[in-house]
Length: 361
Image 1 (cartoon, one colour):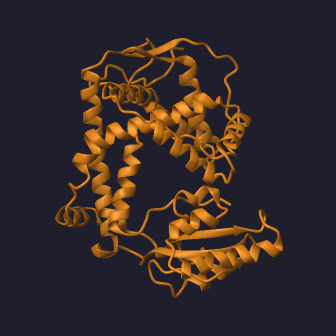
Image 2 (cartoon, helix red, strand yellow):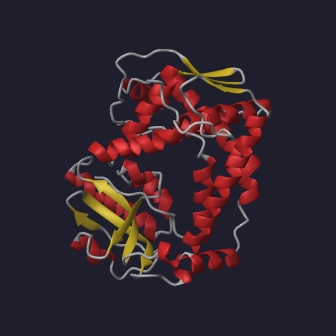
């Protein structure tokens, strides 16, 4: 079962989520679940140096692997000509992103930022999401996917170091810069951008019939419902009980559904719920589910108050993009960056060619 990812409810939670998104902007998304899609492999890997960043190098093998990872990620929701077009468009900044990552990691090292404790915590979070008993079990699953365990940990360490640098140098300056007045002014100038069909955004706790025996299934579902009624936080109960690994780390968020597109059983169970309210147990073909209403939208152009959080996040994202790019240019000005002939770094301040990160024919 595949769901779209959605936003959180509440302004503070939305802004925290938006900050988290941009803190991780410099890192390409890692496949941290234990059931990753097969990676595409080039017929022949040539370890040519594509770029130098101070004392670090980016090799042809690394570049090709990132390209293969990008295609694999996009192939989850695209195919054929559409997939090729999206790969072409998004790969334009691939080399830029790799250079940016090296610059941020080197900055973290220069600042003596230590990520060892955070790496262990992140690995344990992944283990829990994958419902594995130990880090040793996680290592086995990673290696089953053809990855080297030390490389896997190093990728996580790099992400954490980048997160820390961006949080210190960029995020702290942008986080509180969006005002209510700015949001209303932006909305008035871009109302159609926030127009949408009527519908509801939901989060779920799934107790899957594929993972539990019939006599265990209902008991586990009842236990989850009892925890919610006893006042436990939704996110805590999601992590403890939900079997939908794709949405657990998103608080169970399964996305926005237009009016008339939901299963009638789910529609009936959620129709009278207000924002932030949760349903009783809902029996579906997947097992038992509990739903939470994150947002309701009226069709057409909404009132500002209905989308204020979305508007503020849009402004925040735009400011964060600009501030992050400006900071990365500052890092570049203090660093040595050299790109091999036939490749182009789109993050360079001055562009001299329209061919982007593409090998010579």
